[in-house]
Length: 368
Image (cartoon, rainbow, N blue to C red):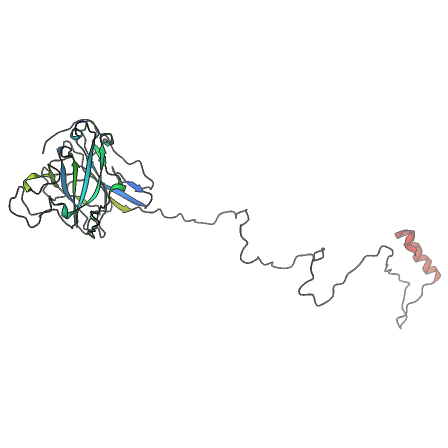
């Protein structure tokens, strides 16, 4: 592979599309509002220098404490800006997932081993399923913090909606090749650019060993169940060759995104009822009318429109005022009754006395 070292300023990349209060230090979390899915990143340590080659194979391993296993939803990687064809500002990327669990080749192999391996899926697309493919324009490249000495944008992330399984000729492997098995299982991926002149930027392995977890920048799950990115191999041509000595250990540089359900916010609980009831009427009547604790203090003076369905046992006494007369009860000591109850007739003097009193009190018309 050709070697190229880049230099310049750094730019921090942080998420601007937060719709839930989830925070990871130095991380990038993207929320898919249609499915309430959060895409969590695994971010490699910032690379001081990189080398370039056409493709890379590497595995992703789940945490031993992860009982479900992550589903990979996107890759963000660095493209060599000098690798675009002359007169053409676009290249094509492809991502393939291995149809089987585990590594893409016998992990006990030695570098440049010529003896046959127990298994080796490099160079044979029969064992792989394409999960994403698209075009990268030079204008799509951005600055990113996973390289610290870049002179121009070189980072590209595959859109989440374009990272999925493709099926060739209607065949179905029955395996979700974007899913990493749980409990420390692994899944292998092959990333490449077309044409061959186009190149990814990677880190040299240094002291890291093949299929060893490379250091990350602390993103991902904060509960200790984040997956790991393992040291892989770079290749110099497309499609990837089946010749072992055309591969060399390389460390992926960029981001790997995997999905997790977004945690929901707990509903707020009221500690006490409101101080005042609502003053607006309800749209629907209550199921049962409220009951009166007792009759009102005074009867109604208005006649009812219809007779009572349950009449009272005693008749109502109706008093009709008469304006043409007046009944007087006079407490006159002179009025007495005989023993048999017959009234004693007033004398002429007693009658004149009563007549005078009424005239004075009620007016002359009361004499009749």
